[in-house]
Image (cartoon, rainbow, N blue to C red; front, side):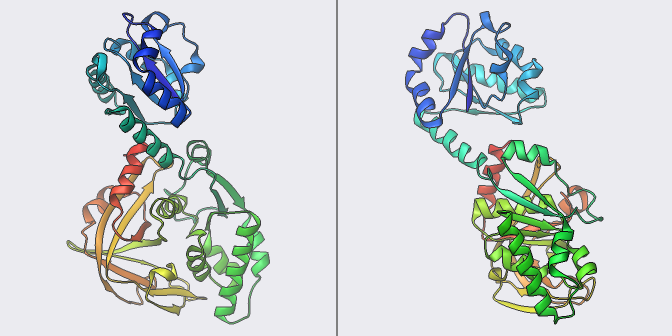
Length: 390
């Protein structure tokens, strides 16, 4: 972690080290921080690499507002940083909070997100430790991408290079033909074919050490005369986050639900909107989210096996993490009021007492949204805030 400390020309580096000895010591010991002190007199000649990938800016004294502006105006400071939110540290001594307020206003006026971390030394350290835990939550995760996104998902892709660098996620691209060859064109019963598909996908996940996967599932329907709906339901229950249609943004939402909230997720289409309710539907749902399940055929094709699940009428969180760089999100909470079944929709159909028309019809983040048990909006919003996501 890299911290840039700003001081005025009226003070020295030694003053900062002595004045903030406890806080700087805690930052080094608890956060493994690399600390660099900059004053007015060396700002122009300071080596560019010291401005790269700065995690926090500590305001040690007043009178550093223009110093920050000079650094802010240098492209190196921003082009090498993946953060969208600049966090200023100010405990209040030596006019540090006053300077931070001016800097925060300057950031806002220039279209940048910022926040001030203010409090006792231990409060500051605890906030940083919790934030680092949040931002490293997905690091090391391996995601299997089975084929490309479905043709109709024209706005659901991600920048793979970005999510790898920003969140430490490793995409693993799987040739869909590998799965097709394993499953084959089955003349077995629908349930046996669905089980064979599950076993084949699970084996690839194990072989490739995948934590999550998404699949261009309609190609399996065409090539193998079966579906992956049951396979995805079972994999989600077994801890492998599994999404359909190759929708990476929704898979990332499901992965976050698992890692942050420890909940399996129902990936679904908003299907009926009223002024008071929203109905979601899809042909797969984690079996553990249901008190009763029925195996039916896949909705669009009438082929193979799809899951109709009845979900408890309790509290749920509806969420979506989207954008090619995962730079936006939506979250709300609602109560389920009805499990319904109609032949005109995907097989699992759940009605929630929430009006999402203003959001979905005017500024939605894609089609698929994710539903998880319980009320988790606060912790999701905290994660998004800590990662600078609007």
